[in-house]
Length: 334
Image: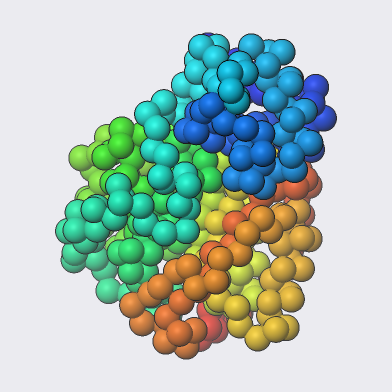
């Protein structure tokens, strides 16, 4: 079974079970079953956040399609295992990572020193671009969280702005656990960062693409509608938030369920209202907001922390919003 066939099967099961969350939710459901089998529908509903009746309906269709069997709970069949492999998902259980998404698991925590060694000598942060380095633990927590949310294995990942070197964290974890990542695509205006990342991960043999790009002006055309997941830590202004989220959406595939991970502080209540409203207008549903998830070296104005916002695409429409390019960065850009 190849990836196209696997996706076609999930699309058919999604349609048959009238799954409004789309095929991506089936993929996540299968991942959790793989990690915890045999497992009940109630447990899977609690971990995925999908209502129990919807899980039960999807289970019936997955059984009809030969992907699941029932044996003291749901289990993956041989055919289901082939489908999971075709999607690029590892069949080696990493259970604690999936069950502890908000903190470092012991498997990843031991990699702190390795990551620290890789990021030593990183370029100095540029305050004019609102750069401030995330801590080593934060970078690994992001990878842990993305992995737990099915956002790494078999995925085409977009990283818009990577002075935090999240790409190096993903590369290190993927290499250590022998995880398959379709591609990591990094866009940054700062060529120093891209050069540094390229040097540090050259030995990991991953499909990593670098784009030195000013998204004020354009985005790489060959990346349009090509990514499954985006992660970004935009400038801490409304206009910066809008620009980075809208640009990321341009590069996501036009499918419901594609994911985004945004690091952003609370700010004043008016800013919180406007950023939430903007996400809704852009067709993104907030699935989770984790306070103080990210910690930084510096960035004292926000207590050296920002929240993690996990969102998913709820529709396929997109219209580029009006953006005031003079007020992207906190220092303003003229």
